[in-house]
Image 1 (cartoon, one colour):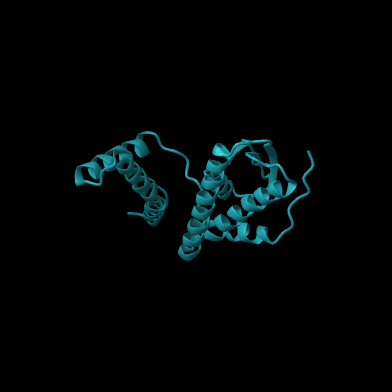
Image 2 (cartoon, rainbow, N blue to C red):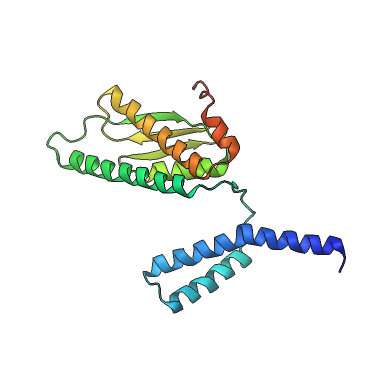
Length: 193
């Protein structure tokens, strides 16, 4: 076997371990979660379905960051879960209080990251916090447009904007590339409509 062929086989195996194995593992876990069972049969069926999907419907490889910090990821999950719980109680209170919702806002948030993957992960984390939803995404200009429930005072809008930026920072510090981390220290671009 020639050296070139051996190198291309090694590269293919490295790419498979970097992209395909995590994808198949994630799809298998998703299958088990959907069925609500962790039995051997469920996991084997999930593995077969994941292999079929990943091989018959291949996606282009998504460039992932080589950085992953387990302590920072755990911290992100803890802080994010705190936001979810707090926002859930706030939304529940707004739903049952006598005066209801007086005013909601559309909030434009300028993000730091230029990485598509990090931007997407931060957007997903933000969209899962109750009380707001992502109305529009502008990746080229790094912006999110959020609809935020119950914002009667300007401080509430500023608080929501700071919360989104905090979630983005936690995502970047947990899984972002070195470039993403360096972008955190740069000033945000001026927002012009």
